[in-house]
Length: 80
Image 1 (spheres, rainbow, N blue to C red):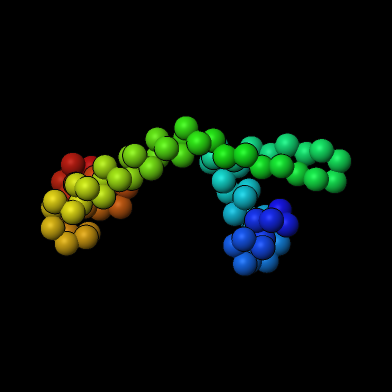
Image 2 (spheres, rainbow, N blue to C red):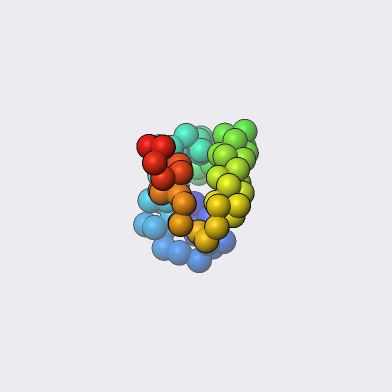
């Protein structure tokens, strides 16, 4: 985690929290060797979710001002 802490410029505790959230959501795996821990990212999963987010962002751009026709996590108003 030392590299992640330095790169993000946040505390060890906050870095650990965020890395745990990524692991719980299936985006990160952890391998330990002695006192060292090595993280890896599930790039395929990350690319899938990025594609999904971009698709939804494209739709909201077409619908008008952000938030006007869409509700959080429910799609267009009236369809959820």
